[in-house]
Image 1 (tube, one colour):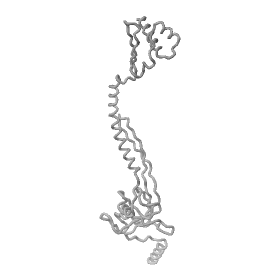
Image 2: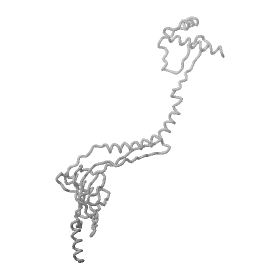
Image 3: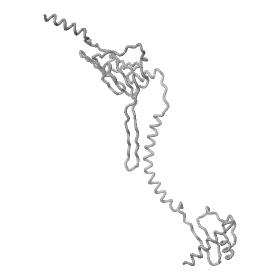
Image 4: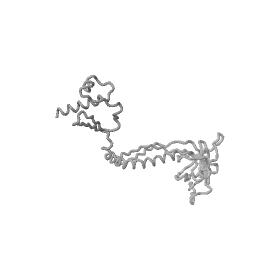
Length: 275
């Protein structure tokens, strides 16, 4: 066995020497001893096949060597197909979720629509408000407290407000800061002497307000997870809000607020009557 291996390695080295243009002196000496014919330069293409066969040095023997490559596709094709099928099961679920997220992002980044003045008024009326105009320096809209309350609806939310109150609603589209608004969806009005309930809205009642600020609410964390799928998504959201200041409530009789002077005169009258 040892002699056979030595002879096989010797033949391999001799064959390799035929591929070099300038082989070492030792290989040239071995070539002359064995009388191997010189092969043409383009007789061997390493990328053309995976087996190397040595020439016939003797008529009775032929030695062949085989190369086994780790990247052989023929041997690993079945294993690769199985692994791709296993991975595809997990990829399908992730692709569906990613597609939904891409659709949401595309909707959020869509081109803004341009509204006509009539469309703006119609949509604002559907939400429950109407823009009058900008607040001027000469306007005296802020009044002292009045013992009257109202229940109003803006969008899908309802608020109980009084004169001077501040409320936060979802962002109103077609209004800017310092705009004067009329909130026309009034569900109920009340005071110390009377209460008015709409069916469902009071047609003659209105609530006046001023836009003070467009702000963002506190951040909310949205976390999604699917177990055994290596799927985790974390997002944050801050809701856009509009701050409104209630300035006046109209549509109900407002009771008179007693002033200090009137209270003093009433006390003097009571004392005179008692005497």
